[in-house]
Length: 197
Image (tube, rainbow, N blue to C red):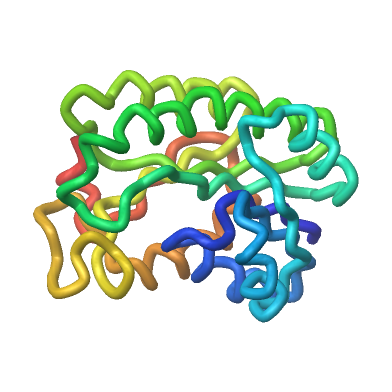
């Protein structure tokens, strides 16, 4: 299968990408940073340098790759948890406008499957953007993956688990590839789905 992975150098994306390649898929890894092209090549992907907010370039890039599936692992988050409130509006824009652009480009390219990262809780003041993302994905027959709070190397919780809902980052990555062909709907990837709000 040909898979276009947006957000391929993020905390989850860079873990999911080699799993897809290992499974025999041909993967285009999208990043907005030209300096990360080498990292994507080393992980086995075709690097695509593109900004999700440039809808024309995004549509051209996805159409040129002609994927069977488009996976959205894009976020705009800080390196440190104490900066989350500053980045909130930027991440909301990824969830709303970025998702809209990516879904439109996937539709134009004829992708059969769409799988999109969401979260299994609603942060104060940010729930509307999360809900909009999920509505958009379900409206086009895609799969919403509600991940618990990630913990482990490279996350906001490197030294131990946060309160639930939560999921170790490598476990979250391993749970994702089988969902590419899942039926449209919401899937919770968390250690205790009963804790999901």
